[in-house]
Length: 303
Image 1: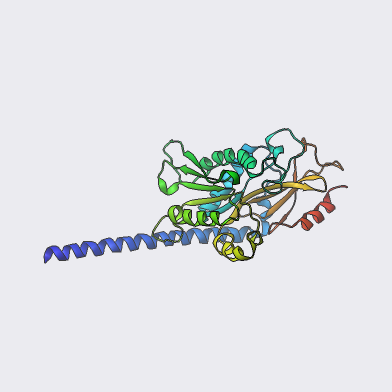
Image 2: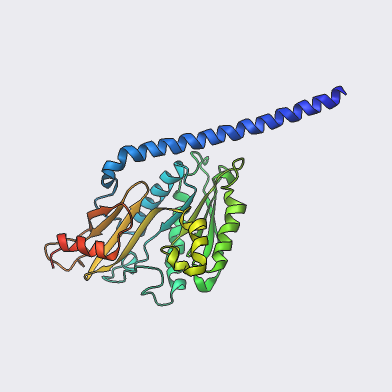
């Protein structure tokens, strides 16, 4: 009987320990969320100051900027993130044109061609995202699994030497096909565990998804996409590039900042002088529409 009571007592202690750890973890997450909310509240009146005056002008600068933004969001408890890296031929070489508004537009070969540029950028990005304070000087290993080659989609995984808790997964170029909805659900269940309070949350990125809003998913898939993805995956970094009024235009979004509109303003030039950096023109609380961008350009750029 004594042995039986001892076993029951040990079991109760173990359960109490589990409950205590779970409550401590929830308390930590709540404190992180509160601190990030306070930072956001205090900085809301001057968010434009968080945007840089000039854009990154090469892939390595983009990767550094994106890694900082993603890490800051992760530190604030944002584990499900959407990011958009620039798909611009101009940023990879000495070409005047080649700006791409969305994936596959203006690229011969479509998504398979954009994947050729995007994959090495993400492979370079993942090790720079800080999810652990100490890796003991060991390198982070990044692997890649091709999903559907004709979609240019893949899944990259970074394995952190600090432990599996700090691993990251990134889904490249998912589109609105039901296959990707199921893939996202499976990754959340098997990797992220975001809905389970007693298990760790790990960072999961959607990189350059093909959709822009729920209308991209059609009538029957819009509601599911809104609930599963659009309401839950926050855009923590985006650098979109395209042409408006014959000028190279960029929209930059970093974590906790507004959307910044950048363009080359060079005393009545055509905006294509690569020696002139794109300057911050204005900012928006949400991603601006074409008409908003056009109106802003009329006010500051000579015709």
